[in-house]
Amino acid sequence: MTPLESSNGIVTPSALHFERHHGGIPNIDPATHTMVVHGLVNSPKKYTMEDLKRFPSVSKFHFIECSGNGLTE
Image (cartoon, rainbow, N blue to C red; front, side, top):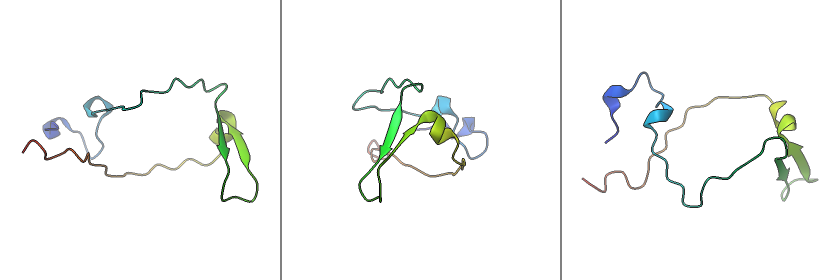
């Protein structure tokens, strides 16, 4: 039921995305947000958003389909 005729290229515009949040949307303050990597690593690491922005950035395209697609057909 996605209006494919409204697409421009192979990237779905944000306005055409359907979103469903079962647990709500977190309110994250980038100035205080941190990420901790632990578990199967030699030593745990804690990163700020500024730390993460220094890593190289990579863009990739992936296809995700909702498990509910086709249920109405």
